[in-house]
Length: 544
Image 1 (cartoon, one colour):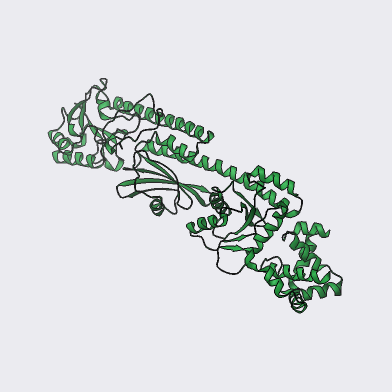
Image 2: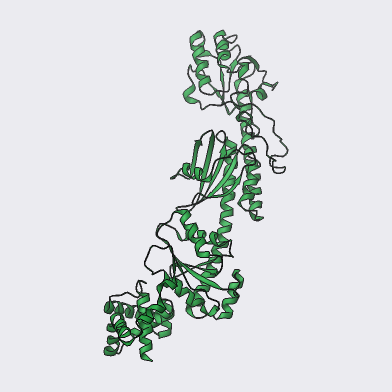
């Protein structure tokens, strides 16, 4: 890879406005800040260096990364590329073929230039070495006898130190700017713009955990035609960092993880792999995106906690309509409009945080998302209008998830009915079938009750479901029916049900297990809630 020096402003490394669609710098124009180039070294009068061969290769092999001294015929096993090699040619004194091989190996190893000490082992540079350097366009310069090699290596080492210091300083400056962007709540787009201004040869793209594009900074069109779907396809699946090529573009990617799950992917798209200082700047961008995601996450987590608390208060019976109205207004939902409750069942392969995030993102166009948890099930309080369940279903389908179902309550206009709406949504999840959205109306409760309202039908149904439990209560003077009724009335929450019955929760658990043993139906599994509810309702009618 060839490089040519390019002028850079030393006064405004991170200043200025957003670039206005600048042309994409070519590979030959990219260089590290304050890099030491061969012409810089040759221009130092204290070294007295003079170019004698390989003029065509000056500054074409990149900046000088280090200086190395060697008298070996083949020092390349100890070279990494980018070195300035200093030698007296002592081991090649009378070997023209060896001198030519020496130069060829250095050129192949990516050496920037060769410095020859005059008058140490040879009075002048061997002709074979000069010719070979011209052939391979490997710069060759002489160092006067009175100038020790340590003067050259010290000069290179000092500059490398200054270069690294400047790179770190710029990285610290960028880090401060990124933090300011996050604090100013300019979003992920603002973070990418801040980093993108100092990486003009790169396009920056952020994908979410499912591969959808979140933000892109690409005023120069470097990543034109590179869709988020394609980026997701080629990203490394099992590594947090990756480098690859897609056509004529290089991609550097970094995953932002939350636990063992990918929360986002940040990608830099360039025409050539990132240089060392660009890698550092890119990592500052990754850190900024991570901070911005963490800020959003903390806001959402706090909102979910408030919804959790509201649902708990509602289902415990401690919240009246005025309390609910105040809570909904604080959460951003107008309590005077119609609403529904959605219950969402999560499959094992989708994390709770991920599913909540997808639901919230889907609801944003309608209203501030009110998503929380109740007894291990995700619930959302949504406006009646706008097709909230359908929006969530489409988002779920886009991710290709299976095993997720939505239970939807009836429309409610009375805040006192919110508790009933939560129950309806939860019960709707028990519907059989493959539909993604399950409406409580599909249970056909009115029709079912009408069909078994006659004495024979009602008695048959109650006997089938609760006959053994009723007989046990009569025979043992127990309270199993009352316990089951309280348990269902409190939304299958053992704590409030035990409080109402003035018994310990362990006693409640024992009674529910006894119901299971007598009926073959476990009231805690949720599979038979509808049957128990209908049987209790019909039993209550017969008791009146």
